Structures are given as structure tokens and as C-alpha cells.
Amino acid sequence: YEYPQYYLVAPWAYACLAAYMFFLIITGFPVNFLTLYVTIEHKKLRTPLNYILLNLAISDLFMVFGGFTTTMYTSLHGYFVFGRIGCNLEGFFATLGGEMGLWSLVVLAFERWMVVCKPVSNFRFGENHAIMGVAFTWVMACSCAVPPLVGWSRYIPEGMQCSCGVDYYTRAPGYNNESFVIYMFIVHFIIPLIVIFFCYGRLVCTVKEAAAQQQESETTQRAEREVTRMVIIMVIGFLICWVPYASVAWYIFTHQ
Image 1 (cartoon, rainbow, N blue to C red):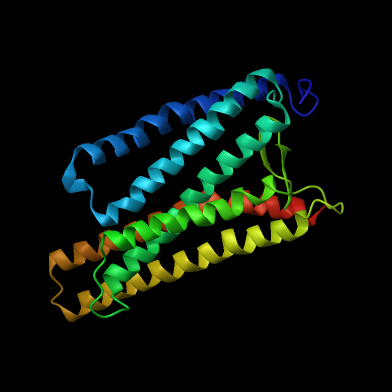
Image 2 (cartoon, rainbow, N blue to C red):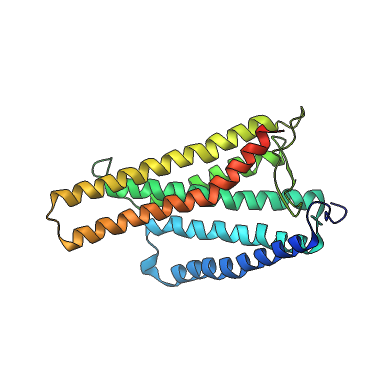
């Protein structure tokens, strides 16, 4: 918190990090803000199935303001300039936004599975279900972002010391890091991964079964291709976003 950390990497690396954060801000803010604005302005877009997409946009805005903006500013100084309280705030909002995004993808997969595969007969997805899904993402995000503020692990500057995250490094008694990291890895990575693979796997199987029961028209073939492509994109997107971070964090934790 006191001086530039140029002994970690060269100053130009901090400049590159600041430039990258600026790029994320100028691309992430307009897209997500427009998503909220257009949905609010057009009633026909305010459908229950779109609630979770709005929640995803909100989570991204948390990342833009709570994470990217702070990291860009601190990168220009070469260290985290906001002190311990600022580190807790930045770590909290960045973790909250990231976890809201993660669980929004989980709820989105679950909702699509419920609507398309109909595991519950006579089920109609309504506004109350959508609100419960959004509330669930907030509860799960808080269950990950709040504990480090109250003694179950802690937030510390990480990497190039320009942003704050959960402490994967300290194994000393009193910080309770081991149990929190294991909890985080299982509940906030493994379980979401299993749910997403299961829901989208069943969705693809259901669409293929429905197409097989009908004549192989161009329409059914196109619908099947579109659903399969959507599933592949969603799964790959989730893996790209979370596997690198989870893998590095777990490696750091297990190779002290």
C-alpha cells in the first residue's frame, strides 16, 4: 500500500495493464448500459426469461466500476494506492460482480433446461420464478464476497499488487484461508460447472430427440444447429472466463 511495486514487473507492464483495463471499461460499460437502457425502454423485452440477462449486465457494471476502474487507476501508480479499506471495498465489489455473473450463467442454464426439457409437467416459467432466480444469484454472490470482510479469509493485493482478491497465499492460523478456498473452489466453481454441463447437455439431447421425431426439414435442422451452437458458446465462454482463474488460484493454494 506504500510504494510502487516495480520490483515485481517492469513499469511498462503496469502501463499495459492500465491500457487493458481502459479497453475493458470502454467496451464493457456501453454494451451493458445499453442492455439495461433498451430493456427498460421497451416493454416487450421485459420478459421473465430476460431478467437474468439484465442481472448479468448489472454484474458486469459492478466489475466495470468496482474492479476495472480501480485497477486502471492503481496501475498508473504501480501499486494499490487506496489502503486496506480500499482493498476490502475493491475486493468485495469485484468478487460480488464476478460471482453474480457466474451464478447468472448457472441460473440461465437452469431456466433454459426447465423451459425446454420440462422436467416438471405443466410448469410455466413466470415472473416469480425469474425474480427467485435473480435473488438466488445475489445470495450466492454475497456468500462468497462477504466472508472475507468478516474474518473467513481476507482480501489482499494480488498479482501485480494493483487489485485485491481473496488471500490464496497465507496458510497461517487465524486467517481461515484453507477452509474458505476449498469452499470457494467446490461451491463456486465445481458445482456451477456440473450444473451448466448437465443442463445444457440435457437441452441438446432434448432438441435432438424432438428433431428426430419430426421430419428432417430445413427448419428443424436449423433450430437444432442454432441450439447446439448456443450451448457450445455458453459452455466455452464459461470455461474461458473461470478455468484460468480457478486453476491458477488452486495452484497457488496447493503449492505454497
